[in-house]
Amino acid sequence: MKVDWMPVTRFEQNCSVLWCETTGQAAVVDPGGDIDLVLDFLDWEKLKLELVLVTHGHFDHCGGAKEIAARTGARIEGPHRNEEHLLRALSEQGARYGARAQSFTPDRWLEDGDSVRFGGVELVAIHCPGHTEGHLAYFHAPDQWAFVGDILFRGAIGAWEHPDGNLIKLVSSIRERLFTLGDCVRFVPGHGETSTFGRERRENPFVGDAALEQVRCGWAAKGQALDGHV
Image (cartoon, rainbow, N blue to C red; front, side, top):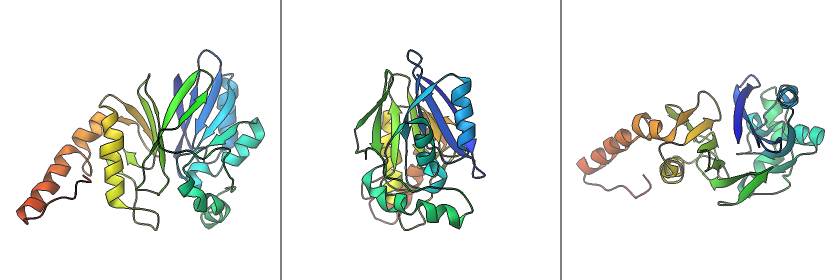
């Protein structure tokens, strides 16, 4: 599998393009907008778009999913059904921020552990709540790539200070569902630079090993115990 990505819209959201080198069939992860730019890339690489994958229901990640699917005939898979209320409100979300976004229902809702396929490539969906309740990451084990949306960033974590966010779930998703995939796994976040889970486990000031040890020590000093989520 080959991988590339491009920032789209003024929110500079990373839209990833994945393709099977054998068949030329491709998938895009989180086409938030600037669909002509994404289509130009596909045309340049002579790729046929088969699959649109969505991590979660925020407009900057999936506002262009319906458009690119309609223009290419690709199917849309994901996110988790817990994002349904966000997908229904995509048009309103976009209008609030002056962005184009079209509401849609995916061809297939995904659950934790579901496989998604295009060409000769298979990825696994991982349910990672915390930024939103139905947030998914996608993992390609053979090449050790993950596409994590707004759960984890290089040196940061996703926002949780909104109705669908939950900090405890967010930290648990990162520590128990992403970091356990292995230190060597490279990931494309929803915004900003790529990184590896190993780097973030060592250096991330919010969910790295050192940060969590400080939290544990603080609770121990107060005579309390952590609840097991971190």
